[in-house]
Length: 126
Image 1: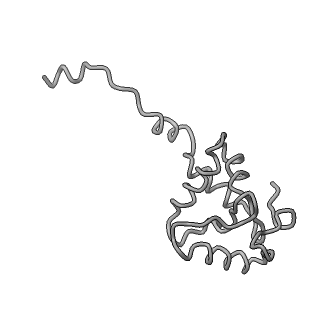
Image 2 (image 1 turned 180 degrees about the horizontal axis):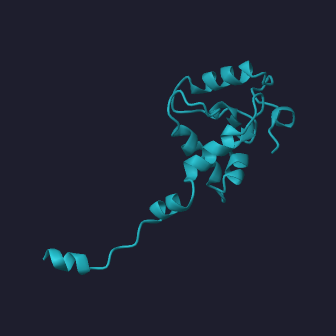
């Protein structure tokens, strides 16, 4: 029987494995783009999705998933990613939005009275 197993055709590798073999996966692409956002600047989930080749309406959400997958203590500046209105998106952790606001303020990013960041002033244009 062992011999017959060897003669069976093998199933093709899953697409996930094939993509990983040819280049960085989704999370790695997102992290690389976010890593390039300069101190004191912000980018939107949509901008990151476009630059990380995550097309379509789910691209910004995929950016959120990639950022949520970051390990604690990461050097990737996740705090520099905001929503399309220049606002901090709520996270699973109850204090995540406060921490993000604190980190951005330390970088000199100012929030308006409505809680939004002026993207014309602080937005990152690649």
